[in-house]
Image 1 (cartoon, rainbow, N blue to C red):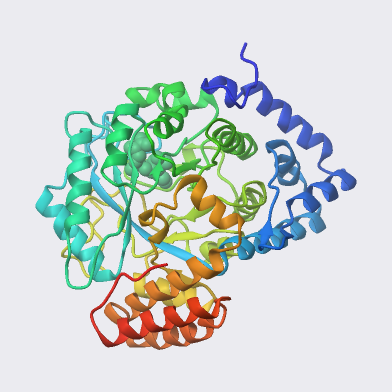
Image 2 (image 1 turned 180 degrees about the vertical axis):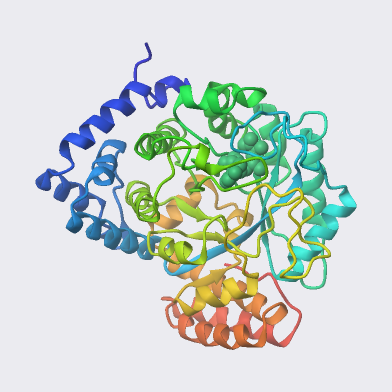
Length: 485
Ligand code: SAM
């Protein structure tokens, strides 16, 4: 029997099964307790301070009560507060990225993933360094500056040395005015030593989805391969942080297990990182299981409605106000639009989930042979950028924080001291201007420059505003790029 202890380094103590069950029971018991709910909502609201805003966040128990409540007025308040928090800390900026699949060789047996070892009809492919270069050029030509690299787990075909070589290649490609300035990495759980090597290679966030926090289900869903080891997987973020990576990204693959269980586990994981390392997760992703080769999502009986999915995102926003939230192209344009109102701060655009899916294909041609899952939002990056601006969001290609060493708690303190408006806001406008000049369609460019003109007025410090204006002018009139605060 394991005791709940958020400071423990043992998976079954910081993600404690009994504590999750007790949390769910507590939430069920209090889901109509209007007085308690009112207190929780008050605690979650951003408070104005002399430096900007501050937010207390919520414990896994408090957040679970909100998630369980089905009182319409409570739900309405949750969504309102989620939007308030998003605006207070992240403003109306939405960071843009794309996945880059390096290899679909995999030795695991994950029941929801088409890359599982027993799938004999999916072609296996691993990019050569020349192919990585071609993919990166194609991504740069779309306008991307930030990638998330993806690979199956296969110590023979995709050892860490291969991943490191690919990262090096990606950063080295300088094509026209393009550059990939931040490479986030989504690869299997590994050792402290390997995390140190990833840190030295200059990665941004290390992302690893927990898939499910429910140990028994986890073991059933991962019947074979190294990923079968629940504790090794769950303790990966602690090893990553020990290896010096201070931006880590959590995620649950929603649909595999009951969402209330997953939600409590996810918030407990964030609390654990804060308790042990003094900094919570940099991002949380909310993927849902999608149809794929050899995979039928109907086989997993925990699929959730769009409404529940949106409420989960809003409750995450209230619980961990300073953590970025990511929504991928697994979701449709309609769902993504709603998720933007629930506190999402990063979206992917123009994504391909196959190995070698970018180079040599036009915007409406999609290779499916090596694909990991069906992409629901199939719009081009240009369409995504225009859509964001037309709904009042600034698409940001900024990577400045990581390159200026503002990671981990230093990024969080930027968030907490309200300096984001003098730093991230102009950086977003500057990088948007790079996008508009180098890659946008004429219509997107027109919408974009109108937005930039209007949004420059929202930079509080006059000096910063003037410098930003000058940088944007330089971008428009020359090939000077990569300005940042
Ligand atoms: N191989 C690495 C690992 O095991 O963590 C990570 C890379 S994998 C390419 C990225 C993520 O895709 C997985 O963590 C999983 O959550 C997600 N995924 C796998 N199959 C999926 C499906 N059918 N629908 C949606 N997402 C899926």
